[in-house]
Length: 160
Image 1 (cartoon, rainbow, N blue to C red):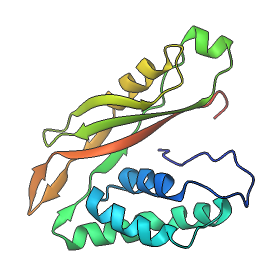
Image 2: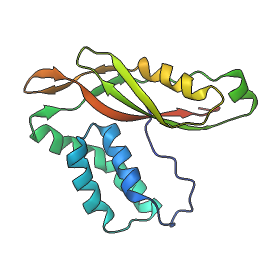
Image 3: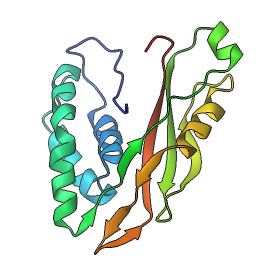
């Protein structure tokens, strides 16, 4: 499973902390209202990309803990398949991330709403197909499975 932000900026360059943090929080399964508050507090300190990378490594556990204290357990990703490359994408040696807005449904299926950030050349469609194949345990609120909106990052890398 991968869901890490790829940051091409120099190690100590300023970063769009709030966007990166909210994206990370979404992939951790944190509710958007709680994530917004946590990320705003975190980003007030204006971390560099190096600092943010360290924060991201530990942030999921604290976000998940806060989420579970609210009586809700987040989605548990069991398997996130690697996307297929299109012939055009492979011949152009394209690499990058496709960010998808989706809902992990209580019935165990994935509903893709839209591509938020794509790379084209048929890879957005391949990412959408891969997202629909994600295996997961649904989020639960008070013991009942519930729908859970999220953003998922599908990575395209030629050499894994």
